[in-house]
Image 1 (cartoon, rainbow, N blue to C red):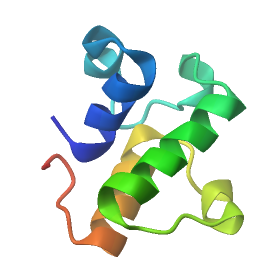
Image 2: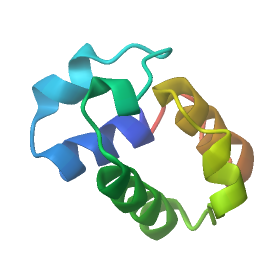
Image 3: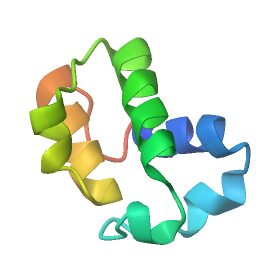
Length: 81
């Protein structure tokens, strides 16, 4: 399970939610609200040390976007922990 998927499990408390999301799933359309997205960003920053600015968040909509962002900034491979 990818780093961001693991954080979604931590955020939602359900592994099933994170397991059914595809790479191109728009997180907002999947039931994650803006408050949850902010909490996801905080988890990313806490767990990876990667800073996510408001400007960065404008370009992050899908699970794959978040995974690539973390991989590019944090050195973690997409799909890897």
